[in-house]
Length: 90
Image (cartoon, rainbow, N blue to C red; front, top):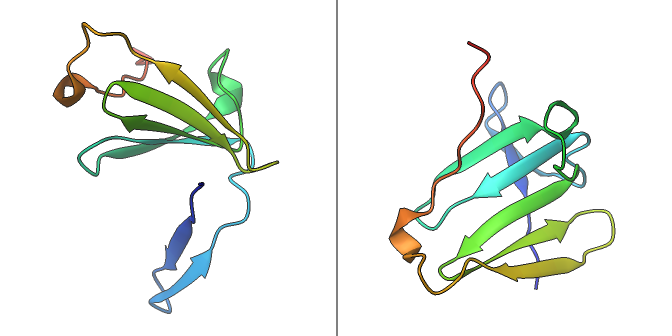
C-alpha cells in the first residue's frame, strides 16, 4: 500500500513522478478534493507526507520511509463530511 504521486509539467504537458514533497504535506479527500500546504507553517504537520481519508479511518503516508500511520475518526463521523480546513491569515 502507498501512493504514486505524479506532477504535470504544464509547459511540456508531460507527467513526472514525484519522489519527495519536500517541506509540503498533501491532503487527499474521498471525492477527489486535495490540498497541499507548507508543513513548516503549520505546527504538528508532518512534512513529506500524504494525509488521506478512507471513510471512517484516515492515515498519514510518509514518502520518507513508505510507512502508513492509521487513525480512526470515530463512529460519529460520517464519511461524506470530511473536509480539509486551513487557517486564514486574516
